[in-house]
Length: 177
Image 1 (cartoon, rainbow, N blue to C red):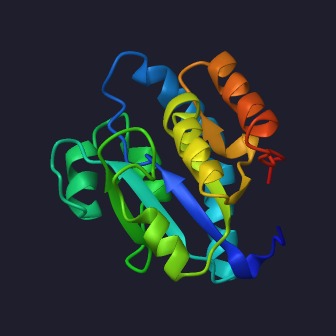
Image 2 (spheres, rainbow, N blue to C red; image 1 turned 120 degrees about the vertical axis):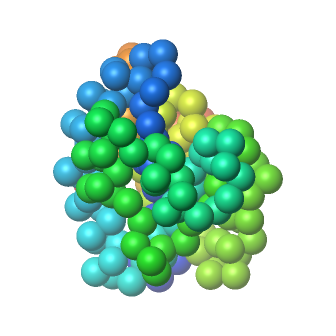
Image 3 (cartoon, rainbow, N blue to C red; image 1 turned 60 degrees about the horizontal axis):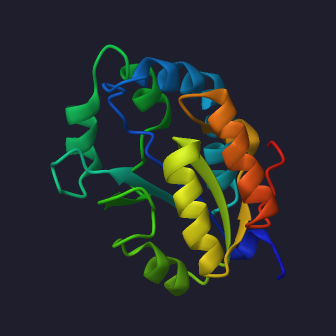
């Protein structure tokens, strides 16, 4: 498959997060570690006119309105991350009902309409939502770049294992950006 910027899109998964769950403090710590890289990835996308597509948990709001989800998720823990990587008005934004960015969302349809066949994925939690999204993307025959320095999980071991699976099973490029 020919990979170029022309056929690429950037997916940012679950960055609007309240981190208010068991081991959320660990995920927050690891998310802050990757935040400069994710900001650099988003800036690269904007500079190169790549579509930036946010796919996020719905937090029982069930409205694809990132302003409402930001309001719901912002707290003392999350505000730094949300402020640093929140969507711009010209970004795409979808909510997802489960772990995968593709499961019961219009993501695949949008990517087809935009003629995008290569995905650069970033997000949290790497060993759950990114892994499931990468699996679905692979099943749809997208080529993948999932920079290891743009993905975080609760536990470093889980993150490393997810990256291993993405490299070996899904043929993903996991080189850092």
